[in-house]
Image (cartoon, rainbow, N blue to C red; front, top):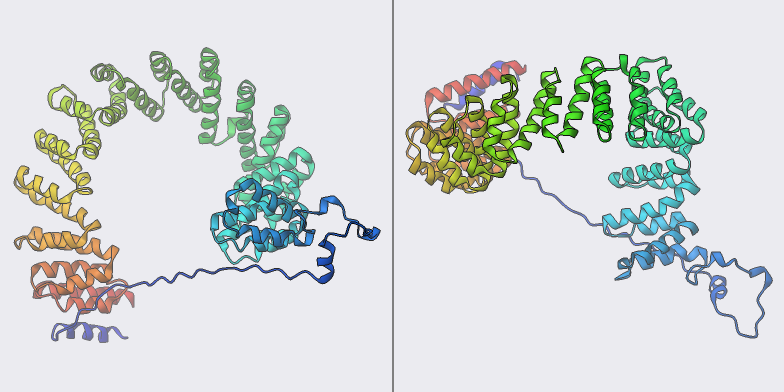
Length: 590
């Protein structure tokens, strides 16, 4: 449609009664339950005769002698899966899991394909998945092609993905080369754990073949995940050889990844040996090298704090601070003073900030007044970090005491601000009315902000009581601001009740603002109901405000419906401005 036609169409709406188009969609969901019935072919006469007990004086035929291992519960192997199917759907059978597991394992050995088909008849999804996994545990090792074909034929995509991962993970233990083949054959399956596990097991059995297979990979994520498995396994076997191998890799990304994996693997087994190989991290990405340094330091500090400190202080600056932070974290558990001394050696402000916050939380578990005095002794640049942790812990564990200290104690601006914010947040969850009364006593900007925090939280539980509190306690402009906040939050859960409250108010800019908020919230949860409600309103400023909010929600996706709604705005100036905005949008869309 040419733009002049659209303009004509929009302009014509103001001269005729345009019927509002109720925006929204009603989605009907049809659930279908499919019952799968697994049937077995009746045995032939010869098979029946084969299972009929012979008379005492009859002689067995030598050619029909059966191995005892092929008989299961009086059934021949070909009947095992049929027996399996019938038992699965017998009332009470699933309560005896040991018995059921025996059935599954035997059925899978005799005829895994039929056993899997029988399992498809289980109605409960969780039990069905469990039974299928038990069948696959045997089948994937015996005949992975048939097993994977059965999985690939499943219509349930979620079940197919789950069983694919399970099958490959099972195969990774006994046949990692086979698991690798399956991973390559299923590119849509991205699971870094399976790649690591497969190559970790493979390199233990045949390192040359595993490394050659890794080297043939071209996908960067596959290479990275497989490399982690190889490096980790090599490091557990021989750290020095693994380090030398990683160091000599020609590609920088491969080398960095292998070095990190080698050291990570060595940390748990022998942190001292890992520490001796830190020189390998000289050219590795800083973030990863700091992480490794921190882990090694933490492990060393578990048995030898002085040795860990000595090692850490000899590291390059970035690694050094990360290592000292980890050591301080260990010391914090049994010697806070020594932890603080270690923190003071850290030069990086970000590293100091986080650990000081943790230490302050620990101090606040004792006497809060002592904690406040301790924070005051810290360097000015560290006090804000310490207060972050201290305020959180005080408000979380003893919010009423924290609130009283704000009113009666002496705090600097930083501590006061953070303690007010934390107290308002935590106390409002436990005793919102008490928290609101306290916030009202603070006065000034900090009191208004604290009360707004409490009101936001309180409104989630009891908006009507909050409104009563506001009416009796708040003053001036704060009444309107807080009332609007409550109604906006109320409309998210109970839009009809919030709308009725707003409509009962005297006409005012505050009421119009509420109508816009309610409409916006309601349109996000139930656009049809919101549209019907707006359409039912009496003409006037309140309805115009609601229509304005509705239009802003739909004008991008349905400009013609938005134009119809615009035609029902009673205020001529507002209607004209809305038309102009819609026309500009249409012009930009050309």
